[in-house]
Image (tube, rainbow, N blue to C red):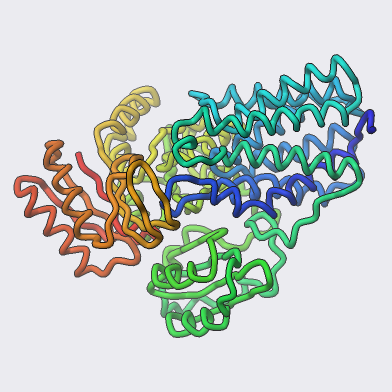
Length: 543
């Protein structure tokens, strides 16, 4: 039984943990009980910890302190989604405790696990039971008890794993949503997988994953930076990676996409299909691609606007920090050409590509924040799963970063309408934050899986309507849902309606949706905008 670990050991342990989460990321995604196509816990955790694995592979013979610091720094910058941020915070706390140490015994490891838990809980505004936080907290507490009995690293780590298993099984009883679905917490499961993989590596049985398929480290057969986009025929550069889950022939997908656009590159192996295509209809491309498996990443850019560069050297990834020429600037997370144009027209200084199923990392947000020529930069996450990643940016830049906790695109738009460039930071924070509660958000998407959720019997492919964060209804006829939402808006007495239609919706069909709202709410001001967003057919704002 191992008494201590050193830097080389910790490096192997973390790389093994990253491999385990990568292998099981789709299973973690599937633990998402809400049937909308946003189950990305596994993907976010995998991309976060694989950022650390990539940097650790480059580190030459790191000591314990260096190995822990490299992992913590990489995960902080690569953190995606709430689960990824919490994972990064667990390792940040571990790194702090291991600072200045050459070896780690059982007592120190128990203290490091507890330091990680403390860091994670400190960052979460309202910690809920039945989550990764619960599993990590109870595992660390057990580790501290075990360390008093036996100071061997392996003994303490085994005790943490045993308690984590019990805690994970109990998450189904602590969270009403999990209990209704009969599943355990996905983030907690991911942490258990990491702990178990670390023990395996400690015993000489390193977990080795197939080639990592996240954005941090991908070994490709083709470089997408080589394509000439000066003479643009098709507007949208569409890139995605699919985790292969069936025997459907990728050549059929290649044939379909070749008719839909140009500059097509399709690379596949036994694990993934990676696609790059220029098209005017990215929604159709994504709908066809989902027949081959689940999305790992999706990226859609308007090549005419060139909001972001797809390929950067390591030097370019550390851009110069813009000198301030004004007191306050704003950065917004968004996806869809029309929605991005709305934020630009409202005065946003920088745009971060991302949203539901496409959570940007802390590093992605940081890079845009640093380009804003302002002393203070407000960040609009526009998604509840991006807020925590945005909150980590302030520690990485000399600029003062303030996160306005917008959870939806309509909330972000309303916040910008209440932004006063001449006002003080305090005045703007108050006005923009208060404005978030004045708008209701409705969304229509599709069911990614069969589900019995909250009294609804849902079949894969059904249209789903969300009102706020709650499931509002399901139907095979999208008009039924639109009518029901319009009736609800009427009952709520809302007067200003904005409908953003997605990349999959023809303009004529979207106009019919707007006409339906106008008929049911004759006194309301109904506006229709081409949002161009993927996945969600309609985003509807009501004020």
